[in-house]
Image (cartoon, rainbow, N blue to C red; front, side, top):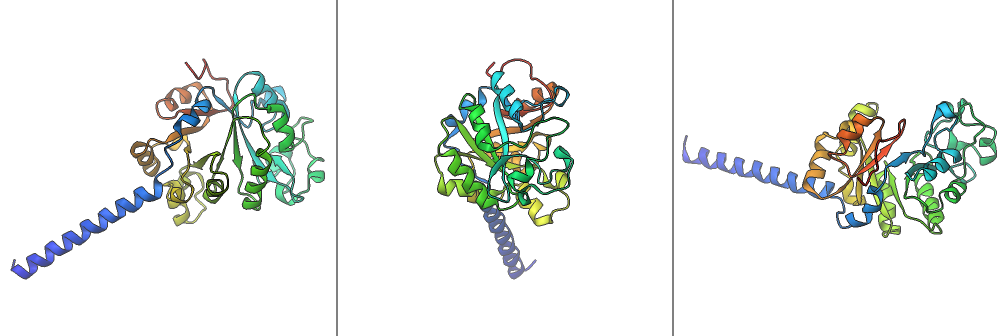
Length: 288
């Protein structure tokens, strides 16, 4: 090998190392969450969080219903719920974009008015889709509350409306969303509110999305915009490289969704500080 070829090889190696170093720095910048408010998250660690309330279909208590939230409060569980806007700008508590699964009608929630929604019931019960403000009256600050902003419809209007309603709420709560821009909105407009980024392995859970979307969202690469105080990740995919690196490199609060049996709970406790559950009653107290 002549001297010129040797110099070219060294230059190439240095260039590759610089590119790798730059990629690592960029990755760290993108995925870094906010780690300064772990203490504020402690209140959510003290009890298990009932997913969409403490629902039980066998007992006629459907998810995201007034009885489910009342039952969670009575049993001392924290609550996670979902909010969306109707066509007439009313905020209701409901998870799916479509009413098909819960109400048996093929309508899109955000295209319906509140009056129209009142014609439908949840499952085979007499319960109807509740107004968010009515749910807040039931909870009344008695237990910690996690409010998920759904991205269906106009995510920005939903985010803003939820924030305005919660401005008058006298209780401990935080927000979360799968939509990074909704989380970012809270960072900019309600910086004192604890905020969380929801995520999962989109390659497994939502294979129909574009590859770039799946890669960015699965690996939390938009954390630089939202700087979330916690990451709420599908516990099934807790070994996804981007999320695994994020929690190992940064002292971030980890929230598990959704734990559905005691074995999953036992495994999740090794990784996650906050547990969201449904479909069973966890053994023991969270604070043990």
